Length: 121
Image (tube, rainbow, N blue to C red; front, side, top):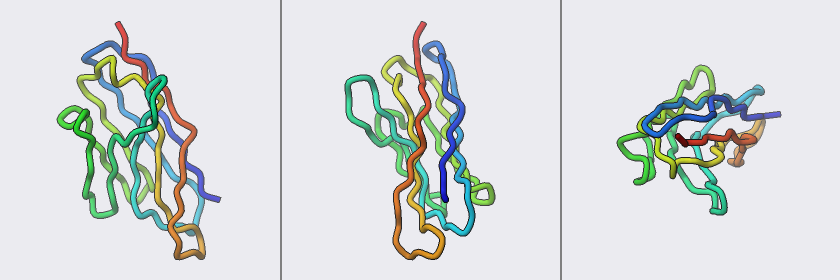
């Protein structure tokens, strides 16, 4: 069974940095892309950044120039480097991966449990 495990959230002051990690565990699967979404308090979940196996990325305009997404295909992992954090970046951040499960040719969405990022002085 495929699972996504996130780490790296926490409390940081404005202007600070955090690095989120997400790793897919299991066997026999193939990852199409990985990414991060976030859900601010009282708001809907929104895309932050995604990256595919060819390292093509899609970054939300609100974080462009501050956030970077990278991927380690050998580790089935993705990372979100967040710099110059702002209070409006406060949210629960969710890892997402579109994966071909073992023995399947149909893509399926997988989600992590989420990690809290709080930007406050």
